[in-house]
Every structure is written in structure tokens, then in C-alpha cells.
Image (cartoon, rainbow, N blue to C red; front, side, top):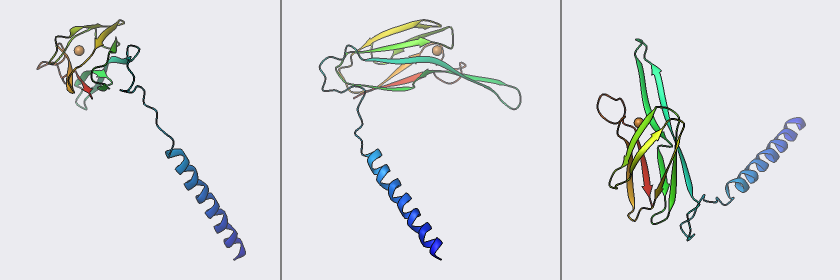
Length: 147
Ligand SMILES: [Cu+2]
């Protein structure tokens, strides 16, 4: 009986430590990667790569999808940001950003740097012209959220 009481005390102590420790851990302030309050954003670079998912269905059919990775990025409105895209999978990805006159090509083994500065909030689609049409599988689209 006495042994059980001691065990309960220890259990209480351990649980208390866990609760206090987790309160401390989750109360720490999160620091953003970049803030809208800063005047110069010229150093802000967002890195992206071209990737590929591929698999084989049970009946032996090979399926694949090219993608921009990460598939969604968030950038501040009215600030200069460089989007760096490195070509890993796929030989060439000719792209454009919907609603803008921005276009270019990402090639395998090369880095393409796109200077961005959006005046309007919203979600803009980065579309690969090659891998978005019918018959080319899943559309290769990334979403640029301007906030
Ligand atoms: Cu593509």
C-alpha cells in the first residue's frame, strides 16, 4: 500500500514537470523568417526546386507528376523578393506567372532567379507550360500567396 502511494507521488511529480515544461516550450515566441515592417527585403530569397513523383500502378502502368517544391509560398506585398528555382527533375520547365508578364525557363542543373514585387494581394499561379496541358498528367502549378 505504501509503495503505491510513493508511486502516485512520483507520477504526480513527473506529470507536473511535463505540464510545466510543455507550457514553457509552447510559450516561446516564434520569430518570422522575414517581416513586413522591414524596409529592405532585397536579401530575401525563397528557394524552390523542380521535383517529380513517380510510381507504378498494380497493373504495371507508370505514372508520374512534376511539381514545384514547395508548392505554396507566401511573400509580402510591395517588397522585393527573389525566387530562386533550381531544376532537379525534368529537363526543362518553361513557366509563366498568371496575371503578370513574368516568364522564363527552369533547366535541369541550373538556377533560375526571378525577381518579384507584387503590388496587389492575392494568390498567383506559377504554371509550367509543358506539364500543365491535357495529356501531360497532373498540372505543374505552384501558388504564390501575396499578403
Ligand atoms: Cu514542368
